[in-house]
Image (cartoon, rainbow, N blue to C red; front, top):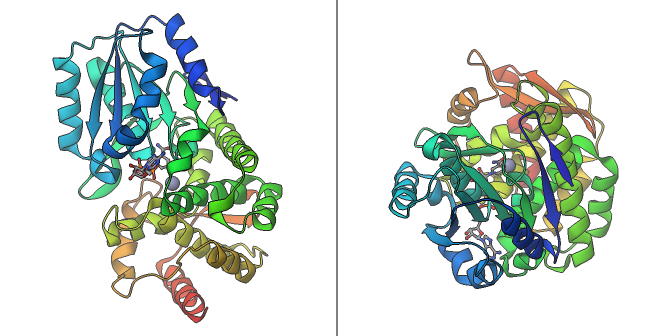
Length: 359
Ligand code: NAD
Ligand code: ZN
Protein backbone atom coordinates (compact mmCIF):
# COMPACT_ATOMS: atom_id res chain seq x y z
CA UNK A 1 0.00 0.00 0.00
CA UNK A 2 1.25 3.50 -0.74
CA UNK A 3 0.33 6.30 1.60
CA UNK A 4 0.17 9.61 -0.20
CA UNK A 5 0.08 12.79 1.80
CA UNK A 6 0.93 16.37 0.95
CA UNK A 7 4.18 16.12 2.85
CA UNK A 8 5.31 12.63 1.84
CA UNK A 9 4.53 9.37 0.07
CA UNK A 10 5.66 6.17 1.77
CA UNK A 11 5.10 2.43 1.55
CA UNK A 12 3.37 0.02 3.92
CA UNK A 13 4.38 -3.64 3.74
CA UNK A 14 2.24 -6.26 5.46
CA UNK A 15 3.15 -9.91 5.90
CA UNK A 16 5.97 -12.33 6.41
CA UNK A 17 8.43 -10.61 4.07
CA UNK A 18 8.08 -7.24 5.77
CA UNK A 19 11.30 -7.46 7.79
CA UNK A 20 13.38 -8.55 4.81
CA UNK A 21 11.99 -5.54 2.99
CA UNK A 22 13.06 -3.38 5.92
CA UNK A 23 16.60 -4.74 5.65
CA UNK A 24 16.62 -3.90 1.94
CA UNK A 25 15.49 -0.37 2.73
CA UNK A 26 18.16 0.11 5.43
CA UNK A 27 20.87 -1.13 3.10
CA UNK A 28 19.96 1.48 0.53
CA UNK A 29 19.27 4.39 2.87
CA UNK A 30 21.89 6.84 4.11
CA UNK A 31 21.12 6.70 7.84
CA UNK A 32 24.16 7.40 10.01
CA UNK A 33 22.72 5.50 12.96
CA UNK A 34 19.49 3.80 14.04
CA UNK A 35 17.79 4.18 17.39
CA UNK A 36 15.31 1.39 18.06
CA UNK A 37 12.67 2.48 20.54
CA UNK A 38 10.58 -0.29 22.04
CA UNK A 39 8.86 -1.16 25.31
CA UNK A 40 9.99 -3.79 27.80
CA UNK A 41 7.42 -6.38 26.71
CA UNK A 42 8.00 -6.13 22.97
CA UNK A 43 11.72 -5.89 23.66
CA UNK A 44 11.66 -9.13 25.62
CA UNK A 45 9.51 -11.01 23.11
CA UNK A 46 10.68 -9.83 19.73
CA UNK A 47 13.78 -7.64 19.79
CA UNK A 48 16.01 -10.62 18.98
CA UNK A 49 14.14 -11.23 15.75
CA UNK A 50 14.26 -7.58 14.69
CA UNK A 51 17.97 -7.36 15.53
CA UNK A 52 18.68 -10.38 13.35
CA UNK A 53 17.52 -8.35 10.36
CA UNK A 54 19.63 -5.32 11.32
CA UNK A 55 22.93 -6.76 12.47
CA UNK A 56 25.68 -6.13 9.99
CA UNK A 57 23.42 -3.82 8.01
CA UNK A 58 23.37 -0.67 10.13
CA UNK A 59 24.76 0.62 13.38
CA UNK A 60 22.02 0.73 16.00
CA UNK A 61 21.27 1.28 19.66
CA UNK A 62 18.15 0.35 21.65
CA UNK A 63 16.10 2.38 24.11
CA UNK A 64 13.39 0.61 26.10
CA UNK A 65 10.47 2.47 27.61
CA UNK A 66 7.71 1.48 30.05
CA UNK A 67 4.78 -0.49 28.70
CA UNK A 68 1.53 1.14 27.59
CA UNK A 69 0.48 4.76 28.18
CA UNK A 70 3.34 5.21 30.66
CA UNK A 71 5.53 5.51 27.58
CA UNK A 72 3.75 8.69 26.55
CA UNK A 73 4.86 10.83 29.49
CA UNK A 74 6.99 13.95 29.43
CA UNK A 75 9.64 12.34 31.63
CA UNK A 76 10.05 9.37 29.28
CA UNK A 77 10.16 11.71 26.29
CA UNK A 78 12.94 13.73 27.89
CA UNK A 79 14.94 10.63 28.87
CA UNK A 80 14.67 9.32 25.31
CA UNK A 81 16.09 12.58 23.96
CA UNK A 82 18.94 12.37 26.45
CA UNK A 83 19.64 8.80 25.34
CA UNK A 84 19.65 9.89 21.68
CA UNK A 85 22.11 12.70 22.41
CA UNK A 86 24.33 10.49 24.59
CA UNK A 87 24.47 7.94 21.79
CA UNK A 88 25.50 10.41 19.15
CA UNK A 89 22.42 10.49 16.97
CA UNK A 90 22.57 13.27 14.41
CA UNK A 91 20.26 14.79 11.85
CA UNK A 92 20.82 11.93 9.44
CA UNK A 93 19.94 9.28 12.00
CA UNK A 94 16.70 7.35 12.01
CA UNK A 95 14.41 6.05 14.74
CA UNK A 96 12.64 2.72 14.49
CA UNK A 97 9.39 2.66 16.46
CA UNK A 98 9.09 -0.99 17.43
CA UNK A 99 5.87 -1.78 19.25
CA UNK A 100 2.25 -0.78 19.55
CA UNK A 101 0.62 2.60 19.26
CA UNK A 102 2.05 3.98 22.48
CA UNK A 103 5.63 3.29 21.47
CA UNK A 104 4.85 4.52 17.95
CA UNK A 105 3.38 7.79 19.17
CA UNK A 106 6.29 8.47 21.51
CA UNK A 107 9.05 7.41 19.12
CA UNK A 108 7.42 9.39 16.31
CA UNK A 109 7.29 12.48 18.51
CA UNK A 110 10.92 12.08 19.51
CA UNK A 111 11.76 11.82 15.80
CA UNK A 112 9.60 14.84 14.99
CA UNK A 113 11.37 17.04 17.52
CA UNK A 114 14.93 15.75 17.91
CA UNK A 115 17.15 18.36 16.22
CA UNK A 116 13.93 19.79 14.71
CA UNK A 117 13.04 16.48 13.14
CA UNK A 118 14.76 13.33 11.92
CA UNK A 119 13.41 10.40 9.93
CA UNK A 120 11.63 7.43 11.49
CA UNK A 121 10.24 4.02 10.57
CA UNK A 122 7.28 2.17 12.02
CA UNK A 123 7.52 -1.53 12.84
CA UNK A 124 4.11 -2.11 14.42
CA UNK A 125 3.49 -5.12 16.66
CA UNK A 126 -0.18 -4.74 17.60
CA UNK A 127 -3.41 -4.85 15.61
CA UNK A 128 -4.22 -1.42 16.92
CA UNK A 129 -1.08 -0.09 15.30
CA UNK A 130 -2.57 -0.68 11.83
CA UNK A 131 -4.27 2.57 12.73
CA UNK A 132 -1.62 4.42 14.71
CA UNK A 133 1.40 3.60 12.54
CA UNK A 134 -0.13 5.21 9.48
CA UNK A 135 -1.04 8.84 9.02
CA UNK A 136 1.72 10.71 10.80
CA UNK A 137 0.12 11.70 14.07
CA UNK A 138 2.68 11.50 16.84
CA UNK A 139 2.57 12.71 20.40
CA UNK A 140 2.45 12.26 24.13
CA UNK A 141 -0.14 12.85 26.85
CA UNK A 142 -0.57 15.78 29.20
CA UNK A 143 -1.96 15.16 32.69
CA UNK A 144 -5.03 17.14 31.55
CA UNK A 145 -5.64 15.24 28.36
CA UNK A 146 -4.53 12.44 26.10
CA UNK A 147 -2.43 13.23 23.02
CA UNK A 148 -2.46 16.93 23.87
CA UNK A 149 1.14 17.48 22.84
CA UNK A 150 2.33 16.30 19.47
CA UNK A 151 3.30 16.84 15.88
CA UNK A 152 2.46 15.62 12.42
CA UNK A 153 5.44 13.61 11.24
CA UNK A 154 5.11 10.95 8.56
CA UNK A 155 7.34 7.85 8.74
CA UNK A 156 9.66 6.73 5.94
CA UNK A 157 7.80 3.46 5.79
CA UNK A 158 5.72 0.96 7.76
CA UNK A 159 6.94 -2.64 8.00
CA UNK A 160 4.19 -4.82 9.44
CA UNK A 161 5.51 -8.31 10.16
CA UNK A 162 2.32 -10.11 11.13
CA UNK A 163 4.05 -13.00 12.96
CA UNK A 164 4.75 -10.53 15.79
CA UNK A 165 1.00 -10.46 16.42
CA UNK A 166 1.01 -14.13 17.52
CA UNK A 167 1.98 -13.17 21.07
CA UNK A 168 -0.69 -10.51 21.56
CA UNK A 169 -2.90 -11.12 24.60
CA UNK A 170 -6.63 -11.35 23.91
CA UNK A 171 -7.35 -7.96 25.50
CA UNK A 172 -4.96 -6.31 23.03
CA UNK A 173 -6.46 -8.19 20.08
CA UNK A 174 -9.86 -6.92 21.22
CA UNK A 175 -8.48 -3.41 21.56
CA UNK A 176 -7.01 -3.29 18.06
CA UNK A 177 -9.97 -5.00 16.46
CA UNK A 178 -12.16 -2.10 17.65
CA UNK A 179 -10.30 0.26 15.31
CA UNK A 180 -10.87 -2.15 12.43
CA UNK A 181 -14.60 -2.07 13.19
CA UNK A 182 -14.39 1.74 13.33
CA UNK A 183 -12.78 1.83 9.88
CA UNK A 184 -15.52 -0.42 8.54
CA UNK A 185 -18.28 1.81 9.94
CA UNK A 186 -16.92 5.03 8.48
CA UNK A 187 -16.08 3.68 5.05
CA UNK A 188 -16.92 0.13 4.10
CA UNK A 189 -20.20 -1.67 4.71
CA UNK A 190 -18.86 -4.78 2.98
CA UNK A 191 -15.99 -4.99 5.44
CA UNK A 192 -18.42 -4.61 8.34
CA UNK A 193 -20.61 -7.41 6.96
CA UNK A 194 -17.53 -9.57 6.49
CA UNK A 195 -16.40 -8.96 10.07
CA UNK A 196 -19.83 -9.59 11.58
CA UNK A 197 -20.41 -12.73 9.54
CA UNK A 198 -17.02 -14.36 9.74
CA UNK A 199 -15.35 -13.24 12.97
CA UNK A 200 -16.98 -14.77 16.04
CA UNK A 201 -13.87 -15.63 18.06
CA UNK A 202 -10.99 -13.18 18.28
CA UNK A 203 -8.53 -15.91 19.24
CA UNK A 204 -9.20 -17.75 16.00
CA UNK A 205 -8.74 -15.20 13.24
CA UNK A 206 -6.89 -16.88 10.38
CA UNK A 207 -3.67 -15.32 9.08
CA UNK A 208 -5.38 -14.72 5.78
CA UNK A 209 -8.36 -12.93 7.33
CA UNK A 210 -6.02 -10.94 9.55
CA UNK A 211 -3.98 -9.81 6.56
CA UNK A 212 -7.12 -8.76 4.74
CA UNK A 213 -8.53 -6.88 7.73
CA UNK A 214 -5.30 -4.98 8.37
CA UNK A 215 -4.91 -4.12 4.71
CA UNK A 216 -8.47 -2.80 4.40
CA UNK A 217 -8.16 -0.84 7.63
CA UNK A 218 -4.95 0.79 6.44
CA UNK A 219 -6.39 1.53 2.99
CA UNK A 220 -9.38 3.25 4.53
CA UNK A 221 -7.20 5.32 6.81
CA UNK A 222 -4.80 6.12 3.96
CA UNK A 223 -7.65 7.34 1.82
CA UNK A 224 -8.81 9.77 4.49
CA UNK A 225 -5.30 10.98 5.32
CA UNK A 226 -4.60 11.45 1.62
CA UNK A 227 -7.48 13.91 1.41
CA UNK A 228 -6.81 15.71 4.68
CA UNK A 229 -3.38 15.15 6.22
CA UNK A 230 -3.63 17.85 8.87
CA UNK A 231 -7.20 17.35 9.98
CA UNK A 232 -8.67 20.52 8.62
CA UNK A 233 -11.95 18.70 8.16
CA UNK A 234 -12.50 15.20 6.83
CA UNK A 235 -9.77 13.50 8.89
CA UNK A 236 -11.86 14.03 12.01
CA UNK A 237 -14.07 11.13 10.87
CA UNK A 238 -11.30 8.79 12.01
CA UNK A 239 -12.30 9.81 15.50
CA UNK A 240 -15.62 8.02 15.22
CA UNK A 241 -16.31 6.60 18.68
CA UNK A 242 -13.42 8.51 20.21
CA UNK A 243 -15.17 11.51 21.73
CA UNK A 244 -16.85 9.54 24.49
CA UNK A 245 -14.16 6.85 24.24
CA UNK A 246 -11.41 9.26 25.28
CA UNK A 247 -13.56 10.47 28.18
CA UNK A 248 -14.00 6.87 29.35
CA UNK A 249 -10.25 6.29 29.16
CA UNK A 250 -9.55 9.48 31.10
CA UNK A 251 -12.12 8.63 33.72
CA UNK A 252 -10.90 5.09 34.23
CA UNK A 253 -7.28 6.27 34.29
CA UNK A 254 -5.11 5.64 31.23
CA UNK A 255 -4.12 2.05 30.92
CA UNK A 256 -6.97 0.74 33.09
CA UNK A 257 -9.17 0.01 30.10
CA UNK A 258 -7.58 -0.58 26.72
CA UNK A 259 -7.93 2.17 24.12
CA UNK A 260 -9.97 0.01 21.77
CA UNK A 261 -12.36 -1.24 24.40
CA UNK A 262 -13.12 2.32 25.49
CA UNK A 263 -13.53 3.31 21.85
CA UNK A 264 -15.93 0.45 21.19
CA UNK A 265 -18.20 1.74 23.94
CA UNK A 266 -17.93 5.24 22.47
CA UNK A 267 -18.73 3.82 19.06
CA UNK A 268 -21.95 2.19 20.25
CA UNK A 269 -22.92 5.46 21.95
CA UNK A 270 -22.25 7.30 18.68
CA UNK A 271 -24.56 4.84 16.92
CA UNK A 272 -27.35 5.67 19.38
CA UNK A 273 -26.68 9.38 18.87
CA UNK A 274 -26.77 8.88 15.11
CA UNK A 275 -30.07 7.07 15.37
CA UNK A 276 -31.69 10.11 16.98
CA UNK A 277 -29.73 12.89 15.21
CA UNK A 278 -29.36 11.66 11.64
CA UNK A 279 -31.91 8.84 11.45
CA UNK A 280 -29.25 6.16 11.00
CA UNK A 281 -30.94 2.84 10.41
CA UNK A 282 -28.68 0.13 11.82
CA UNK A 283 -29.62 -2.89 13.91
CA UNK A 284 -27.71 -1.72 16.99
CA UNK A 285 -29.05 -4.56 19.05
CA UNK A 286 -27.64 -7.20 16.70
CA UNK A 287 -24.32 -5.34 16.65
CA UNK A 288 -24.20 -5.25 20.47
CA UNK A 289 -24.89 -8.97 20.61
CA UNK A 290 -22.00 -9.63 18.26
CA UNK A 291 -19.74 -7.46 20.42
CA UNK A 292 -20.86 -9.48 23.44
CA UNK A 293 -19.80 -12.69 21.67
CA UNK A 294 -16.39 -11.16 21.07
CA UNK A 295 -16.08 -10.27 24.75
CA UNK A 296 -16.50 -6.49 24.66
CA UNK A 297 -17.85 -5.05 27.89
CA UNK A 298 -19.97 -2.07 27.05
CA UNK A 299 -21.01 -1.32 30.62
CA UNK A 300 -19.64 1.91 31.96
CA UNK A 301 -18.59 1.91 35.59
CA UNK A 302 -20.96 3.34 38.18
CA UNK A 303 -18.33 5.90 39.02
CA UNK A 304 -18.46 7.38 35.55
CA UNK A 305 -19.56 10.99 35.88
CA UNK A 306 -21.15 12.05 32.61
CA UNK A 307 -21.06 15.76 33.47
CA UNK A 308 -17.33 15.51 33.97
CA UNK A 309 -17.12 13.62 30.69
CA UNK A 310 -18.88 16.49 28.94
CA UNK A 311 -16.23 18.87 30.27
CA UNK A 312 -13.47 16.66 28.89
CA UNK A 313 -15.33 16.23 25.57
CA UNK A 314 -15.40 20.01 25.22
CA UNK A 315 -11.65 19.99 25.55
CA UNK A 316 -11.41 17.36 22.80
CA UNK A 317 -9.38 18.59 19.84
CA UNK A 318 -12.42 18.29 17.54
CA UNK A 319 -14.43 20.71 19.65
CA UNK A 320 -14.42 24.41 19.04
CA UNK A 321 -15.77 27.27 21.11
CA UNK A 322 -16.38 24.90 24.00
CA UNK A 323 -19.05 22.86 22.22
CA UNK A 324 -18.68 19.08 22.00
CA UNK A 325 -18.61 17.83 18.42
CA UNK A 326 -19.35 14.27 17.45
CA UNK A 327 -18.72 12.12 14.44
CA UNK A 328 -22.04 10.53 13.54
CA UNK A 329 -23.17 8.33 10.69
CA UNK A 330 -25.92 9.05 8.23
CA UNK A 331 -25.37 5.59 6.81
CA UNK A 332 -22.62 3.04 7.17
CA UNK A 333 -19.79 4.58 5.18
CA UNK A 334 -21.22 8.09 5.44
CA UNK A 335 -19.88 9.96 8.44
CA UNK A 336 -20.82 13.54 9.35
CA UNK A 337 -19.51 15.89 12.01
CA UNK A 338 -22.09 17.51 14.26
CA UNK A 339 -22.28 19.74 17.26
CA UNK A 340 -24.69 18.22 19.74
CA UNK A 341 -26.50 20.02 22.55
CA UNK A 342 -25.67 18.85 26.05
CA UNK A 343 -29.19 17.80 26.95
CA UNK A 344 -29.33 15.57 23.88
CA UNK A 345 -26.00 14.01 24.84
CA UNK A 346 -27.38 13.26 28.28
CA UNK A 347 -30.66 11.85 27.04
CA UNK A 348 -28.89 9.50 24.68
CA UNK A 349 -26.43 8.54 27.40
CA UNK A 350 -29.28 7.49 29.68
CA UNK A 351 -30.84 5.43 26.92
CA UNK A 352 -27.49 3.85 26.15
CA UNK A 353 -26.82 2.96 29.80
CA UNK A 354 -30.27 1.45 30.13
CA UNK A 355 -30.03 -0.76 27.05
CA UNK A 356 -26.48 -1.94 27.66
CA UNK A 357 -27.26 -2.82 31.28
CA UNK A 358 -30.35 -4.77 30.28
CA UNK A 359 -28.36 -7.16 28.13
P1 NAD B 1 0.71 -0.12 23.23
O1 NAD B 1 1.96 0.24 22.56
O2 NAD B 1 0.50 0.33 24.61
O3 NAD B 1 0.55 -1.71 23.16
C1 NAD B 1 -0.42 -2.36 23.94
C2 NAD B 1 0.18 -3.44 24.81
O4 NAD B 1 0.53 -4.56 24.03
C3 NAD B 1 1.43 -3.04 25.57
O5 NAD B 1 1.38 -3.61 26.84
C4 NAD B 1 2.54 -3.70 24.76
O6 NAD B 1 3.68 -3.98 25.52
C5 NAD B 1 1.88 -4.94 24.29
N1 NAD B 1 2.39 -5.50 23.04
C6 NAD B 1 2.68 -4.83 21.92
N2 NAD B 1 3.01 -5.68 20.93
C7 NAD B 1 2.93 -6.92 21.46
C8 NAD B 1 3.13 -8.22 20.94
N3 NAD B 1 3.44 -8.42 19.66
N4 NAD B 1 2.96 -9.28 21.77
C9 NAD B 1 2.59 -9.09 23.07
N5 NAD B 1 2.37 -7.88 23.61
C10 NAD B 1 2.53 -6.81 22.81
O7 NAD B 1 -0.46 0.50 22.41
P2 NAD B 1 -1.58 0.08 21.37
O8 NAD B 1 -2.69 -0.57 22.10
O9 NAD B 1 -0.98 -0.60 20.21
O10 NAD B 1 -2.02 1.54 20.91
C11 NAD B 1 -2.64 2.46 21.80
C12 NAD B 1 -1.99 3.80 21.65
O11 NAD B 1 -2.04 4.20 20.29
C13 NAD B 1 -2.70 4.87 22.43
O12 NAD B 1 -1.73 5.64 23.11
C14 NAD B 1 -3.39 5.70 21.37
O13 NAD B 1 -3.53 7.05 21.74
C15 NAD B 1 -2.46 5.55 20.22
N6 NAD B 1 -3.08 5.77 18.90
C16 NAD B 1 -2.48 6.63 18.06
C17 NAD B 1 -2.99 6.85 16.81
C18 NAD B 1 -2.29 7.76 15.85
O14 NAD B 1 -2.85 8.05 14.78
N7 NAD B 1 -1.11 8.19 16.14
C19 NAD B 1 -4.15 6.19 16.41
C20 NAD B 1 -4.74 5.30 17.28
C21 NAD B 1 -4.19 5.09 18.54
ZN1 ZN C 1 -8.13 5.15 18.35
